[in-house]
Image (cartoon, rainbow, N blue to C red):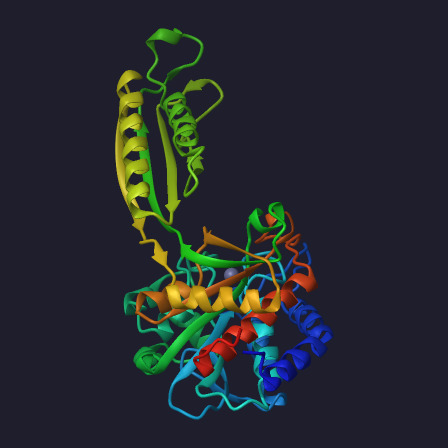
Length: 423
Ligand SMILES: [Zn+2]
């Protein structure tokens, strides 16, 4: 079957909007522009509010119907023939001094896709969703808005504080919303036929293998541990090398083991991203060291195996060095497999547009996780990130790559709504 004329037309409208996509990205990048460089548009800040206001105005100017939930998530809707909906979502907040593409690319492109589909009678309602507070930078909790939308935010989390002592619920209120109406913010999940998210890769893989876009197969789950090593504080001048119980040396050996165990495996990454010597000094043999270990994988079994290996070796090293080791698990999130039908429809969309894509896992977490967790058919599409840099003012994606993904997402949306493939 050939590509339907109405889809050809929608694609042509989307392509004509290329300059608009660039303009929107640049205009949103001005909101929260940090004098030290980059963009600081934190979760539930006035800057985030302003970006939401901007997106809402654009959506309204396109003729979409704007709805806001009581906690500030924004939905811009294109009515369909049935009660069902297809959601295209992402976020608008940033980390401190972050980049202009993370999250925003998804929202801006989804808006243009809705605009391009204005003249098409879709079966389902098309919803462009902008979720609040995706980044964990402010409240140490990630994916807040989409957790709210899918009914997965534990009310106790509203008590979480930022570094200034401001509680999440207070921040929500000061943005003009209602933290006490958490239940009213939950979407009717059984009406959602699909959730698709378009995002920058935030890693170097697509650029390295020269693909403009990637179809995400799974999202890695992190498991995090705190390891406290207690040896013996001693005088660095008077304590012979063979009589020391050096906690930091033991930690260093563990850090290298993490690297050795994880290197060469295709689906596991392990990192010690933080290490402290509380009370350390240049003239002391370190008696205590705390290190933070994170292992991520899309394969739960492999993650478990790797973690067991690392912890066993950590115990052996501690024992050999006469150091006491205390292990505490901080967090464990399951790996998420994305929906096979959504993967297929995104592959089909890329194929039918002649866009080369890579099937790949995501090491970073995204709002899509929350939709998949409640059983909604969920898919994700990545576009290439220059040098893999993200959460930085240097974050960059080529407009042509952004457009390739946007076109594929439009085709996928259309194919989902029609329930048919036409090649
Ligand atoms: Zn993001």
